[in-house]
Length: 240
Figure (tube, rainbow, N blue to C red):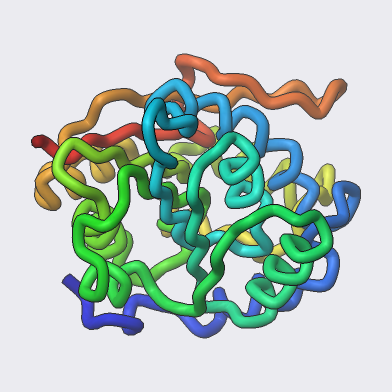
């Protein structure tokens, strides 16, 4: 596993810190995150229900950014810790949670560092659209595996290194529709499902499910799909 705190690209941190001020603006540069959030939440609930029968489900949201997903999971009844290494976006997340009254804890730290501090401390670990932005995504997935208890779940989303993903996520989203700032993504950092599955096995995780994310540009609505050529979600489980 990468040394705690070491698996980070300073240029990527600066990139997302620059978006902090408009993170919760549904029409701003983070609009795709707002549009994606309902389908991500739907997939998470399908993989690992957030409302525990007897006690609150413990969730860590790795790379939580300004807290869009973290707050949504807390609203569903989970006890959520959001972690990120970009202080500027964590400040936004904490302020928004204070304004809305949503109980979410936020900490400035890496998944690797938290895995050393609280191994097996969570029922569910989520990591959305982060793996393609770190130097060693396999190490991040190993940290996610270490964070959940035996029998716990890991849900991640990322982009497939496929020509269609280049056309949609970079050419379409960044240059044509301009719903993302140019330079948000680097194609060579995209991750094929086979690579993600291999890293999961190496981390001791079982791949339970893969689902693609489809998009209707007219309605700005995302939906779960069988097509994983662009955005996709993966559900892993740590064996009991």
